[in-house]
Each structure stands twice: as C-alpha cells, then as structure tokens.
Amino acid sequence: MDIYRFLLSGSGGQGVISTAILLADAGLHEGHHAVQLQSYGPEARGGATRSDVIISDGPIYFPKVEQPNYLVALTNQAMNKYLPLIRPGGMFLYDSDLVQPDLKVDAVRKGLPMFRTVREKLQKTVAYNICVLGVLVRLTGVVSFASIEPVLAKRFEAAHHESNLKALRLGAEMAASAMEA
Amino acid sequence: MDIYRFLLSGSGGQGVISTAILLADAGLHEGHHAVQLQSYGPEARGGATRSDVIISDGPIYFPKVEQPNYLVALTNQAMNKYLPLIRPGGMFLYDSDLVQPDLKVDAVRKGLPMFRTVREKLQKTVAYNICVLGVLVRLTGVVSFASIEPVLAKRFEAAHHESNLKALRLGAEMAASAMEA
Image (spheres, rainbow over the protein chains, first blue to last red):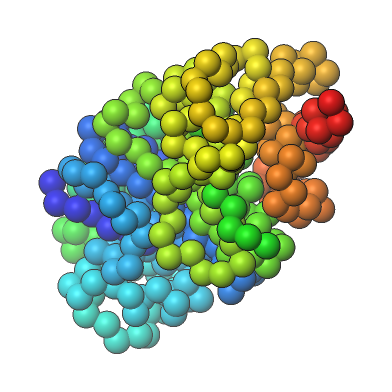
C-alpha cells in the first residue's frame, strides 16, 4: 500500500474524532502502521473539529497531516478551513446537505447526503459518523470492511453494534452508487 | 505555563485513549494549545495501548512525545515498554495493584491503588479512567477541575455524568492524600 493521509473535519457533535480512531484502529488490524492525531488550538474553540489519520506500511515519523490525500468536511466552516490544504488531485468527501463546496481547488469532489440518508433510513442520527466511515472506506479501499467490524465491536457497547453495522453498510452502499454514477 | 508532555499507557479496555482526549480537550478549554496522538504499529496488536498528549502555551510543531515529563502506566507491559522513555526527574504514575515498578529509572514514582479504590467506592469500574484523570490533574496541576467538568459533559451521555464526576473527585482525593503522605 501507499501512504494514506486523511484529514477529517466537522463540528463538535458529529463524531469526527471517533471516526478517526476507528479508521486508524482498522488500519492496525490489517497489519499497517497508523497514527491518529487531534490538534487543539485556541482558535479551535467553538469552531471546526479536526482529526488527522495516517495509515502506512512503514513507520510514520511525522504524525501530522499537512496535505491530505483524503479530506472529509461535514460543515462549511470545516470546508473553508481545510479544503485549501488538500493535496492536488486529492479526494474531497463532504455532506452535500451541510456543505456548499464553492472553493476552487484541484480535487475530486464527492458530495453525498449522508446525514439526511442516515436519518431517513435508520430513524436516528447517532451513527452518522459510522456511515461517513463506511463511505470513506468504500471510496478509498484503504481497509476492508472485515477489519472495521471487530473494531466497532471493541469500541462500542454491544447495544449499539447492530445499528453501527447498519450505518456502516448504508455508507458503503451510498459510496458504491456514487462510484457507478 | 511550561510545555507538558504526557504519555498514557495501559491495555485495550482501560480507557487510556479517552483519558488522553479529555485531558487535551480540557487544555483547550483553558486557552492552551494541545495535541493528542495515538500511534498504532503492528507491534501494538494485543499489546500496550499508548496515547500522547502535549499541552503548551505556544504552537506545537512535533506532536509525538518522545520523552514524557509525565508517564502513566496501568499494566506491567506498558510500564516495561514506556518507563525507559521518561524524561529524567519526570513523574511516573502507576496503579499499585496492577504494576510492579521494578525498573531503575530517574523518576518520581506515585503508585496508587486506583482500580481497587474505584471498584470499592463506586461499585463499578467503568469510570476507572476518569479516576486516573482526576489523579493526574491533581498531581500535575496542568488544568483545573473546572475545565474537566464541561469536557466530561460534552463527551459522555448525560446518564454517565454523575458517576464520572464521582470518579474524578475520588481521583483528586487520592492524589491529595498521596501528596500529603
């Protein structure tokens, strides 16, 4: 595998940090090296949440993502802040109901109505971030779904496992439809 | 403030990552810069969990902790792996029922029976890692308790808030007794 650099961003309640931890942990399950970083600065108060993930076959000496290959933004504020950092030709995944991507950058854009779809199909939005993870994993192929399931089982209470799996699969289906389109 | 470098370590189910996130987030609440990092390598599978936290007044350019001022170890495996990294004169906090600190290093040792005390006083151990956070905050003074409470309220469901606060206060009391001793 190559080195995969992710920057996941959104607002406080959207579960971005949890998504990042799950992604990095799934990378570990596949025998890769992975780091997951949150940076908090005074400018982050009340603003965009950011978490960086790097997954690689070799040791990772600098764990911060300065130019993501893969950027996720779940709010306009996060998009405005982080889209300018994307590596030319990188992939930008956003929630098409929550983000209006009007910045001009050299990136592949994938906008999907993830929040709305989770609410409609699962009748609750607590697993929104797991759906985002499902989309991301399916679009990038960085880890297999078989590696996500044990990580979900380990990090969440058993009562949430079934709805997490539904949200994960929903994300994968949305990504598959978007790739065919 | 100076720069505070923490390395928190233990085994998978002990909540080390959550403790690290709470600590870094409390640092942010006080207007500091903070980073929180997990590193996963193939050697970490089934082994020691590690999370790094740096809290500083200025920007943090390298987010990995190579020599912690403050090391927490909740298992012997974690202690064996990370105690050799401690900065000379640094503080080593460990669970005195779970860890036998037989390595010779230049460090201030604080061993407290945190797990046992949480089980005895709170009748459940789910908030063990919050008790560890309470000890760490009281021993180091890096953030105030007033900064931890809103972070706990933000990151956990309301049903857990009261028992989290009890565990936090229990940790603070244990640390205060240890400092008087």
